[in-house]
Length: 126
Image 1 (cartoon, rainbow, N blue to C red):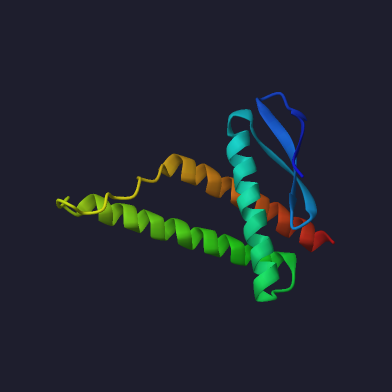
Image 2: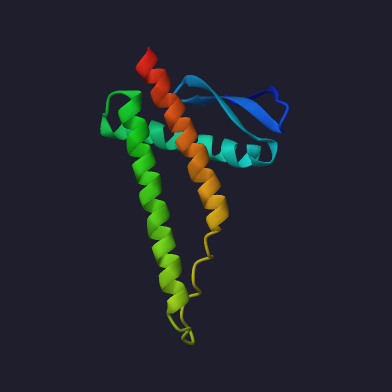
């Protein structure tokens, strides 16, 4: 469940988000709200997949594994994009994958890191 708690004075909003059934408050710029919500949905989905298939106990470990998996996929996609840019186009070859928007990827990573940090902080205090 994701709900908007309200704007603060500097154009940010605080969102109530849920990761693996635990509620967290996350602040972000209003302009980045959609990207943060997408990142939360991705992270929650990955955390649930890990919990359900790998029998890893503990929210902290699940969050770390999900973050590592997502970071690995990002690195692989960047490497593939760099390789595709450096290879000469040949007739009949498959088209190169779309280039990754580094700025958008960085914003998503920062949002995911924030969500993970908050998840870990909540885990340590409970």
